[in-house]
Image (cartoon, rainbow, N blue to C red; front, side):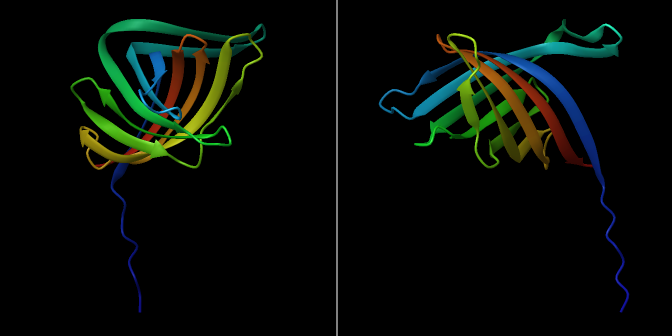
Length: 158
């Protein structure tokens, strides 16, 4: 018996955004945090040269993305996170932690750093049917100020 391999009709969408905002404890819970950040249109540029790596982030104006999440800190210091990222009027993705997230001292007084992988669980608008993974590399200052760099790889049905 011969089986035909089903053809996949998806497109891959990869992009980077840097979000800024804050994280704060949820009232009544010592282990739950609420994060809210935003990002405007931007261009990341990286050049590898004889003088080293030159990296720039240019604000290009226009559209904006909004991020909101709920973070539950585990007894071992790792965390689980669920949330939504809305990409202007284009649509949104919902996500949950893939494995565990980690946060630890940065070596700079009053600054924590961390990373987490999120699995895209649902999409709306342009992102309907999306699957994929978002990598978050972030820092949190003592006052709750967050800088969060997202590398996004989405697979979208054609």
